[in-house]
Image (cartoon, rainbow, N blue to C red):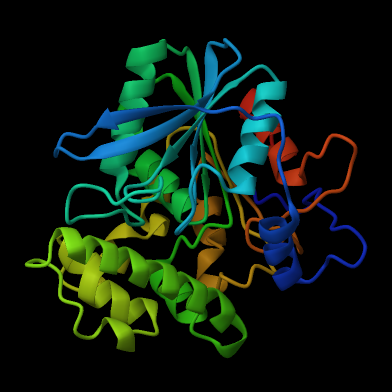
Length: 325
């Protein structure tokens, strides 16, 4: 599809900085008006996934996939759920394995390409509620997962899934992993590594014979972590093999439903390789929008409704996915 060359997002005064756009919503945004109903479902490999439902009695729904070390309680998930509820859509926010407040029951965890878990969620949602229309929405890692899911299924995707919408997507995983190694981004990397290490320690208590903690304290990069844990836990040779097989960019040409990818140009998480202009130009379905500002899962707006630009943009696309504006 043509690149959306004139994005409508304008950052508020004094909020043009990508780091400020990324950090402010995480620390200072509080969402009211969402009351989740939690459900735990079994996976085919005898594990579990926790789903949070925010329903208004609709036949249309969104399925929300969060980012790395996030959950259904992140402000960007709650804000998106609220925006769609207000427009008469049900919202389903699922928690990746180990992200709902307790360790999962298998050695494997979650990763950027684990579309089998997204498929489990989608089939459960259809079977339980019989929705006529579904939109998939993903953020960061969850955005990569969403793009990969849609692209790898090509024409076999369920006809009731009418659109996909993604924000701040590290769709070329190797580039993003190295980009976060840069000195100006170490604050984000350090936080992620601390959280991931804590997850490994908790899992070690459950599976001490399968998980080695010897070098855990030395790890300071995604490459080291993915080499030691992500890759072997999920059947990949090493970090390079994991990144190569799970990056969403290689699945874009398989996308067969209207799909929106929004990556801000000042996103501190994303290198140049995560702006797939050529793939978008060659696709009949991918709409690529790259606002100058927005940060990582930011897109701050100040208004009476409390709705961020990203939420309004997602509603517009989901309700009229064939329109490029």
